Image (cartoon, rainbow, N blue to C red; front, side, top):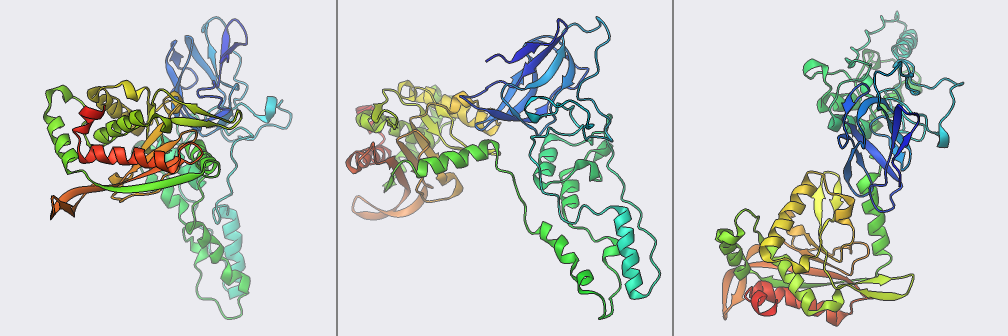
Length: 483
């Protein structure tokens, strides 16, 4: 779809594109430019988070940033204009940005004309669109200094004492130029999740920057001088004595909005669990020889520069098992009531990231040599940890591996990645007593769990795939004879 429009020969607008497959919205995580900055064709201007991944958006033309339509943290529908660019700066006086407003008056004037779909374009730091997520006010944080003084006077009257002087207002946060408090993106996200207005936070960082500790301090209920009066007589009204209990509730719970990757995970897992009839089978296997092979591969010059670990051999073993049992690599087409056999393997690898669990996949993994597979795994993991996995990298998977062993877990019952037929869980590899050649010896042992869609894979087929993977890990030389 078109992602830019021309408002005149001078100004061009860039719209929120569909950066995934049919996605309808994205959240603006961070702006890398501000009004007045010069941009060039292909320059990244912002980072957005979709239901699948965080994506950087490049601008498709040169010019000077005229206007940012939405602040960081706003969820924007695909097709809405997010930035306006002056492509002919210096050719005349530019009109003031439509959303510009004083920092002290973020609310739109009643007579201001609303944008389509109820959204009001705004500059970064000058309020949010009407369709932005509205958070419940933090309990105990809405009292103004004047209200506190009145409460103190009432308390003093009840106790028969003179009203104390109103406490001095806390130091205000040091705003950046333009009225926007200084804070790094992770700190802004933390404040957003906790429902804290950064304008009310007192900064302690260098040059007036708000730190994570400052946000946590603002989130914790603080005891104001008026909130801790001298012990009151028994005649004090019960309502006054019970008031602090309301404040304490905010420290006992944290509410985190479900959106972006986490929301997509939740929807996909619920859809998979209640659509595909899951069956899970387990097998415990001696992987001592596989661990020796991993050690040897690390010294092999052909594997220089790539990461070699047990997951690499396990991935290759699963690919060989699928080659021997191709019927397991399929999908269920509900609309046409068909089983779709896949003649390729896009191998998904579940990865835990700061934004949640994602499952990027290695395209055409079945055609890759062991060094190529190792390089692809290394790139996949690095990209996922950096939060740069693209939506395309997570689309089209056929089977998945999830390595729960890295967390010290023995095994699990994994839920299928939506649209796939099988998922293999790998448990922790531990030194355990094992009967080897008629004697009990310490051996490297792990437990594998294979979950599969019982509409596509019956017990016999699932058992064959799992047994083949186990047999290869027990005797890795089978990779040569079976591949």
